[in-house]
Image 1: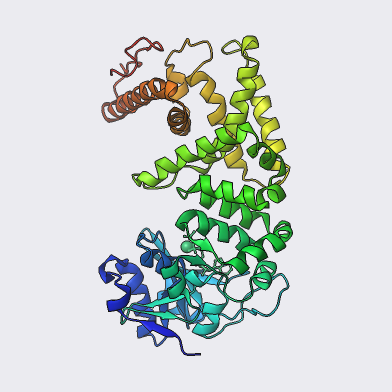
Image 2: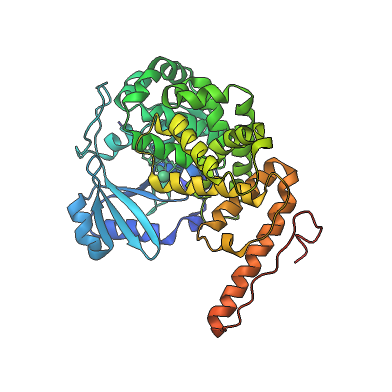
Length: 427
Ligand code: ATP
Ligand code: MG
């Protein structure tokens, strides 16, 4: 089939905003005699006026040939998808060889390394909006799948029969909701029906891939609407049944507020990196812990309940997360537990708070502070606590710097600041 070609006059993408290093990777592949296009998420992002966060490149060169061109700057990775990572300074570009996927087959795909033509490569992709190529040599968009039209009409549509495509790889259902949440596009009626019909299949997918899509969504600035969609579609019930139940109750509203606060931080765009995954995990569990602790507030005295809180956090992880995902990353569990435990010290229930230097010594203190910021966005009453701790932390970092640059033996401890004294944020 002949693809539709769209020239620069029509698509209007400013070529200067495309990463120059990505362009260079493609021109080196072309100089070596291969075809190379930008593909997938980056083309979609440019057409929807977003800055691509990474550039995926598709080429006719085989992995070994890519390796030969880029030598030490190239590593070949992946078993299911064998692809090349090209290192350019701090950036990494993912370069994959055009491959064919069998779109008539509805069995779960287990390996996916049959090389193919550009057209086959476009057709094995998930949604039409993700199936466009961009040729940086002449600034054209090459469309084999009707992605251009669907972007104009703001429609999400699987490439090929949605029932087959979801059965082949059920993670595509989560991806569909991810793009719905992120772009606000409508889902084509057939794809919508197939999602409801195939949703049970989701449990067959590799847990690590599911978790990766969840984390990416928590980092996306559209986490709240993603969870709403996951809950409405019934996918959340299949993946995290206990959490899904809770999301439908009053507690769900509180959790959504935490997710919305994380979204606000992400969509301001000041961050070099998204919030840490442990902070985002805490957004899901902390509201439950907080409720539990405030229900038994009378029994709690500052300092004496540390072990209880830890125990409670372990229960929450078991009940809401590990029951579905036994291989949930340990670093994230441990750090999220630390962040949540520390909240009691940052805003103790009795209201008596001291800025203790010991707390700051923990190398993950800044994550607990970021989480306090999220709590302050959810509930204004923590704003003063947050500003005061932030300032205290900033001072202590400054003192540390000074200490290290002068190696002064007379390093002063930061002064203690009382909570609600009115001086908390006046440093
Ligand atoms: P993001 O902005 O989250 O990175 P993305 O669309 O770029 O979104 P990636 O996971 O980076 O998602 O995948 C890159 C491209 O690979 C997609 O745009 C799509 O063309 C293709 N792709 C990804 N996952 C699948 C899948 N499960 N089935 C078919 N094609 C896929
Ligand atoms: Mg991508």
